[in-house]
Length: 473
Image (tube, rainbow, N blue to C red; front, top):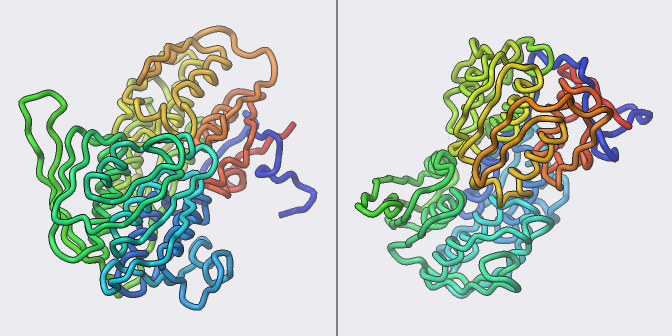
């Protein structure tokens, strides 16, 4: 990087200019959702796993840190930040992780301190592994950073207690920091009314780490169920298997699912490549649609992916964009939005900030109002995303109706009289939202542009290479 240029990650605020034209191929990082699951599975698998293309985002760094705290090794590495460990997280690079499975050692393992950073996915996956996939009596502490300290996971904590694990929060119940004492989970677990699909994924991983067949009974619906399929796919790559059957009930909300899990996990002979991140791809494709609508493509993830956010093509098509050219290995969008739309974001809540920006474009251009529903899980993320989105849309001069789990976005006033600086509340996805607004609304910038390091450290430069023009104070 030219030393005379402003670094967006260090800037007080940043955005793009409204004459930008993002188009052509856009580079996006590997999937952080898949990468965290790959690292969690490799950490408790027998043998050495070869991993390729893991992103170097903060959430994935946290997962590697937790894997090593549980006993997994980067062969030859001495520290968590040494070159051998870092090689796992360099885009396109490959590295090995040698697992530390829960069988073969009778004595409790040394006390472990797990630091997942701000990642709820990482915290839940490794909490379950610490409590259920280590020799009985092994102790571990999960220590959060930043906004993770304010997030809860009551159903997961309760499921671990019922399994017999020791669960001792350091402060308020059902949240981190907390200490866990490991136990063999036996043949069956129960999870009641999960608040996140990550809770289901965490328990499936922990059960698959041990040999034999075990069951997980989930009562109530699972939010964002598609992410469980991503976990099941990862377990299959490590030789595990999961069978799912519906649990019916005459009482509303009392149904669920019965998962039959067979382990143990074993490192595959071939290297595992991490596919590109569909959530990042959604931002890139929306950027193309909102900045002159030229054809924009993301390679390395396509309609054949298990990642729920590949639904971005269907969503943008609902707003009038063209998605011809998308296939099993790539996603492609062309044309600007031509109409408002109503979208249920329940199966893919991470798309809500992207679609809110698309809805704002339609409302500002007089193309109609839009409605986003299924937003109930967004209240408990890194920020209250529904509230932050509503504030940003309102600041743009739009009419916004905010409900507990929905946003209605309609044309409003003439808009801001001058530059508009939006506060993302420390949330990387709110930075993406503001950046998308800046592509069609002059003068929009976002505070804390460095928040993107959580999921996409190269965001600002990757979109600049694709045609975005950076704007600073």
